[in-house]
Image (cartoon, rainbow, N blue to C red):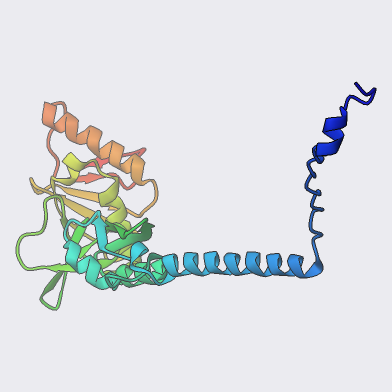
Length: 262
């Protein structure tokens, strides 16, 4: 045997050839053109995403108005508020001008305050605060409800709502001193006492007089110290009701620290 480990026969047949190993492929270098292509692709994808998002919120029916919900309406109907708001069904929510809609609703005489908000994904909410009548005034045969600020906001043809007091002033309105003083007196009274007031009148801001259901005249005076005047009147009426004081034709609370009964 040969020292090489191969026999003569092996050499004659030929030794098995070595298996060739595949050459390693060198990684391809990142060329400037490759980098430009990737930047173009990323930019195109970003533009497509932005365009899709814009379409979804600005033009698609996916986030559009399908309902206008009204809260807080009592004397007004929900349909009256919706009509005033002027928000069309199908308007994309992002394109709804909530400030303009609120301004339109605020023009309704019965509305004291209003807010309009988007109710994602498909509604708008209109929340109104209606004026609360405190008094009723008559001008040229028309009877109008008046809120605590002196605003005339609605007309009535039948009986006024419960607790609403007939008010006799020459120029009713929020800028009239007589109107403001008389309303201040009425608002300061507790509900049960105000329910006994059958009329209020004033020629100036300093000579308010209230008339009670039993005919008693309450000389109120001006708008100052309204809470003290109210407390004094409530205490006196309680004493009269209990028999502690005799009824009086006139109760003068214009100086609440020195009430006079006549």
